[in-house]
Length: 409
Ligand SMILES: Nc1ncnc2c1ncn2[C@@H]1O[C@H](COP(=O)(O)OP(=O)(O)OP(=O)(O)O)[C@@H](O)[C@H]1O
Ligand SMILES: [Mg+2]
Image (cartoon, helix red, strand yellow):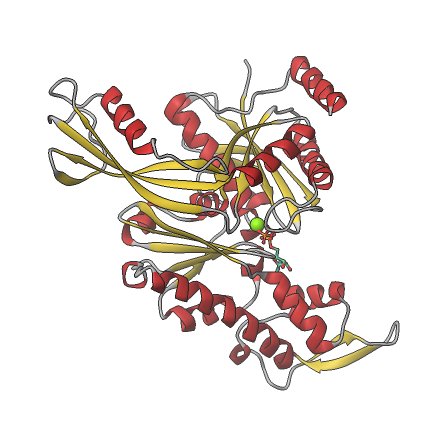
């Protein structure tokens, strides 16, 4: 029997990460997705958006090849993350007359179509159209109107658009690597999918995914997405501060941050000294760990205050009763929860993928994988809803298609 595979590729600034997962054959076991393979490659040619297609293509190819090798299967179609300050979101209403007395799937599809029919300029592309709420004969707050009696159906859709050029460059890089884009998924939505619980989204929560060059934010309450934002600041800024502050090379600064860094200087013993590489090769020098923490804290505080201001500007802070979930590679920094609790004056927890996963789930149970795992979980949701959107399975034919695509480009 052919297995149903779903693949995702997260194009981050530092790493391109591919995940291949399998939908369990037995429908009873379909509460979980089996992770089969994970591949990572250093990203080249990418900042907030793709800057060099050839280099990005190579990163995608390498990450997917590694994931395929581990999974022992090839894929053809992949879900890919998109982000950047070109992303915009808006609410769009739609209204239709119900065809019979009872609201049918067809009525719901029609009202979605009406709400989606917004004229975008040619340089924008619709990425997501997410139903927020339905109204039946003027009554608000309906989540699923299917089968309800009524004559007038209204829908509020949350439309997310992005630069058509940025989207096209992603498709082109993926295509050149020998794959097809099944769909583009907004990164913060993917991260939210893998680390937030349904209850948190209901009560009110924001996921703050701190990557290398960017920080993605997605806020939810009453079970629906309410705000998306991307901040142009992430872990690399901390590394650069350590390069300056400690006069050490970038690679050493990154290592120091990841191994010894603390985001809340109160947590560090002021007497603790640590060894750092010296300016003369092979030598080391002693530095107070508290000093390193001060440098890190200043930058992380700036980042978290920006995230706080973004949520405050949207009037969301009082609605986030479940608080803040931190994820993304840079959220692995020690003491970051303490600092975030001080900034947000709200509960803070760390989020790593794990829920709804089986197979080699341990290999993706780290905050840096939340976007990549969220992509395959989005594909899983779509497959469960529609039976579509799988990434295919291994067969000689797919291998041949890929080879042809590679030769063609
Ligand atoms: N243990 C750690 N402590 C502190 N920082 C860490 C740790 N592990 C990773 N990082 C930092 O996380 C960042 C990379 O995070 P991530 O992998 O989420 O980024 P990315 O997806 O490549 O980038 P972006 O999403 O911004 O494009 C780097 O700055 C790295 O130094
Ligand atoms: Mg990222």
